[in-house]
Length: 180
Image (tube, rainbow, N blue to C red; front, side):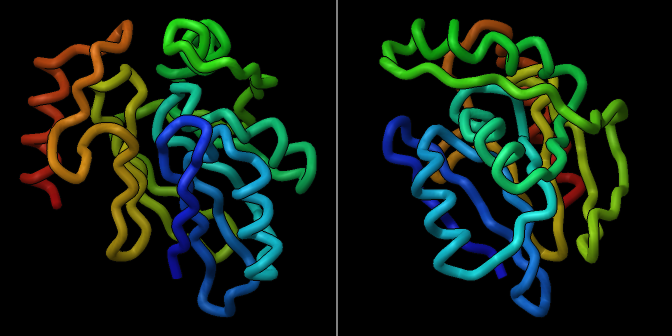
């Protein structure tokens, strides 16, 4: 089951992906609203086993440190976005968001264009589709695709963030539609 948590401080989505027994979960893209994310975990009586980020922008890694420390769980992301995630407070300031986060070091890094990993009972496929950021990734779990900011409900992920490459993003989206 996939549960959505809407972050209020800066509009983004966090996903809790639970296993068949509704016991354990993965936290994907923990945004800036740590209390809403943690409240949903508690409400559903889930035990997080890992955190994954589709990319390193502040609205997708803002809650990582809090969750890592509270649940003693590892953090996964693509190596190409480590620098961006470490600059999260700088980007918060640029975006005019009056908030500061504690940045977290990833415990596991994705290195390739495509990787298959297993975390607990979760078999995942990770695809690196650069463009929104160099390390933008799609996380595939069963019939679910977590695309971060590569595509939105009504458009592609163009934001004019530093490091964004619109041509690469277009190529990545085309490749996504070919694969999925």
